[in-house]
Length: 554
Image (tube, rainbow, N blue to C red; front, top):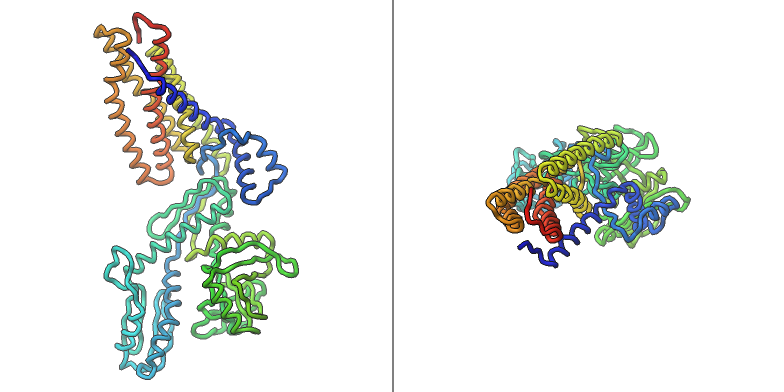
């Protein structure tokens, strides 16, 4: 006899109702989206504008409000492909190594002679010593500064490659260290780009590494590629450097160990500053827009414990001297130190607008990119194109769904109607689950849903055909239905498990559109099996218990 325990019936019905309830907000997409934006603004700022109050009231708080996020091809937005300048990191490493190497060599000045840095290509440090006969000793001293590479592929190798010829020592990063540095730089760049994009309140960006030195950035809902470039393209390298001198000559020689940087506010003014900063933006723990004593826009900042100590010690020892605040190789402010600045907090002043101060604070909070970027490809996708894609995808889904429903009803009669009803529930469950997990729907994702519609009835076809076979073998209606589900189960599981594994491989190895297709396919397979095995069976069992037919036609 056909039997489904009461607890199973309750669980099946509850899961269907819960999934459909989670899918309902997508029918009122704009209203729910504005409601969610208002709640996010309230959590961030603690206050709402009149428009946000109205938007929040547009959807009841007690109802589900999760939505399926729309991808770049459906919502419109910006696409960028950026190349990271990894060579800048090599140069910074060599610049930071020079003071340490100079101190180590200076300790043996009596034997190796005078020590000075000479011009060299970026990413390379060349040091000349006064006594060429002691070059081997000098090389060994510099080698003592090397450290082991901490990676699985770099075991047994040092981070520096050091050689000596004549009276010159040449230092570069070793190949193993370059590989490790490249990976660290790319990971850091990815994380900082992600934090900057997230801080701007965009939805479901795609930020992924491509190749050895490129980053793919796709942000739905942003105005244009130029807006996205302005948000993430600024390196935002902040440092506080000692001022050596001021000049109006842009070609002046700042001296070894110094850099000549332009004033960001006064054209024709240049500062010679020490190339090794006293404190960098890496020590910042907070930055926010503020105003100075004259009411002009500024940015207040706070250092961590290490930065606060270094900043305090330097200001205490250099009262009355100018101090350069450098952002992206421009001096944005050069105040004179009036007194010891303790506590690790201060303010950056300059010729800022309120928006510029807000943007600068955002960039400093997100952190500095470890290297500059060149945008190799940029593309703006308008919302009109996204709307056309949604309309086309929706038409395809509706036509496919209607064709499948007509076929099932025409082929299997009442049982086909049960399968059709389960198919509608299946589509609702797909959207409900994608809303709950915060998945992103792309145009290939819509293709995955259309494919799911076709696949969803496969299990029902197997079951119904098996029931037909059992009826031909003179089985009674109840026994035929029971055997139909039992004997079709192995084929259903086999077909869906293999498809599920294929979709899982696509998700793991794919990127962008491929993953969007894989997500909807995986969710569709899960809901299809559930509706075919349990939901349709519950309908058939309920109908059979109500009608008790003596004969059965499928």
